[in-house]
Length: 285
Image (tube, rainbow, N blue to C red; front, side, top):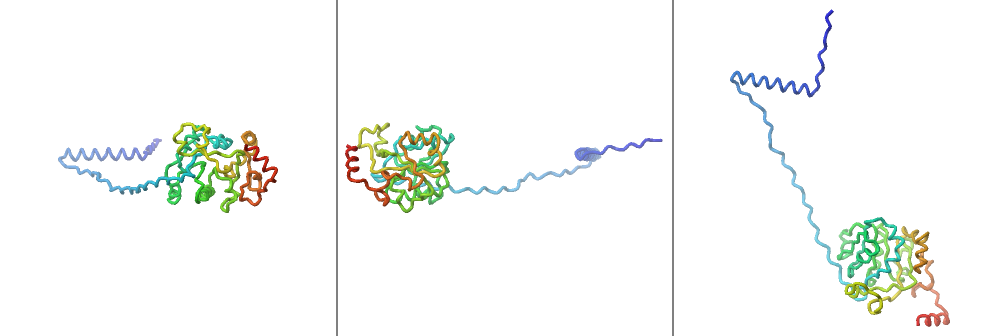
């Protein structure tokens, strides 16, 4: 009996190589017989590529308008330390945005507290950047806006609609205004008035000691108005102890504001009797 042998199956690659060898052998045979071989050449012309569309560059934002004399004040370094329970909890490279430029010293002050923060304090018109939807991306907003006109109302409107945490150093009377949203923020109340540094002094002096009263202004009590998402950091554990040590009062809502710190326009503010007022005057002296 004769054994039948089956041919091994070729792979696709082997079949292509076999076809090429056969084609080359035929070409050599034709050339040897004096014939010519026509080879197909691939066209090297490339199809035209679509030209990229260039995005027109946006014009620069206008510079921040000059502040009035009364508005042109910088937040002192110690006022930022009142936010320490929150600032110390933030990761490195947190981006903090202050949209009001003034003398531009906010970066120096915040960097003294945390050198690993990224501070955005551009010298541009904040309201123009809102209108053109060109406000920078940020993690947290900390600011002390001008107090004249409608700056405070515009500032709080942006803060509450941004969806980001915020802390605004504002006059105490803000809580008594119609635009104040009591359900969206709480208050950190320093028992001592915040003394603002006049901007021309802050620029001229590397370190304002506060010995010269002409360098400072403290026309009224100021509160830190902060978004509710950071409230637990000031009402529990180390944050609560910090507030006690620094003479800070945390008011979760308007009802919790102590009488002594209520604005004079607040109808709920109780006036002290004549003896108490006399004692207060003697204390100030």
